[in-house]
Structure formats: structure tokens, C-alpha cells
Length: 217
Image (tube, rainbow, N blue to C red):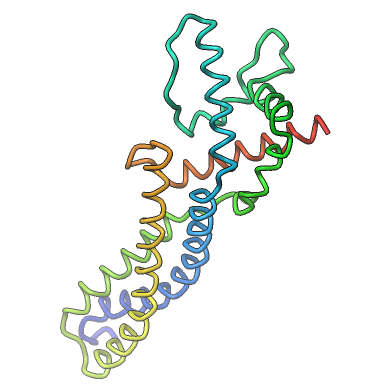
């Protein structure tokens, strides 16, 4: 067995090919989840309206504090609403937002239903993407070496089989990236904003809002 040419290389390739379909299967539902989240967020007018209410409240506070009006704010600041309190320690900025919505547009208080995809914590996509990219690089790099004819034939068949799935994943991933870019532009977020962090913050905000709303019902 030790006399087999390129044994270590062949074992590495076999291990990679064994793990690749597992990573691809893990990756597909995560990409699909992100695409659904992006589509809901892009088309959710009620979420934008809630942000407008929040901006108005923030500018009201700024005016009373002698500060200039803000033109907007980062979505990452949404999770701070439940932490900002006034004299009444039980009344947060999130409660103030909910109060104004209930006074002006009560129906808007259920806006979280329009973002149902955010009811679960977003899956960690980045690690799985990196795995697949690394596997693909490994296969391409090590496939260039010399192998036994039979091994090379089997390896070629395996690569062709997985390449179809990889190409489909790549196209789906490109769609996700385009949708996410639209979100960043729409909400004025920097182009390098991590999607996992952003979606996690939105998930937390929606969770906090639902809880605050439930307390008032």
C-alpha cells in the first residue's frame, strides 16, 4: 500500500469529494433562506414606514436636545432601542416607537408578519460558502497531478457529477449577492456590511418589537 504513487494526494482528494456533497447540501437551504429574507426586506413597505416613525422620534429628541436633524440611521442601531431609557426605567425608546404607531397607525403594529422569514435566527452562511470554495480549489489544484489511470477516470466522473451542482449553487449564490446589494443601497448601508450581522440585528429588533407589542395587548 505504501508503494502506491501519490497515495497521500489521492486520499486527500477522496476525503474532499466525500465532504463536498455534505457541505453543498448544508449550503443550499442557507442560501435559499437568505434569498427569501432579501426579497421580503426589499418589498416590505411596512418596515420602511416603521423606520420613518423611528427617524421622526429620533429627530424630535435631537431637536429638544439642540442637535441637528438626522437624515437617516444605520440599521444596526435598531437593537439599541430596547436599551435606551428615559426617567421611567421601564419605558424604552422601543416602547415610544410602539406607542406612536398605535396612536397613528395601529395596523402597522403587526408589520413583523410581513417579515416572517426573520422569525428564525439566520443560518451561518459564510462558513459553508468558504468550505465549498476551498473544496473546489483543492480539487482543481490536486487534479492537475499525475494519478493512476483508473483513479483519474473515477476522479473525473466524480468532479463532473459535482460540478453541475456547484454551478447551480454558484448561480443561486450570485442571485443572493445581487439581492443583498439592493438591500444595502436601499437602506444606506456600507457595501462591506456583513449580511449575517445585519440580518441578525433585524431579527433581534423584530423579536423585541413583538415582545413589546405583546406586553401592551
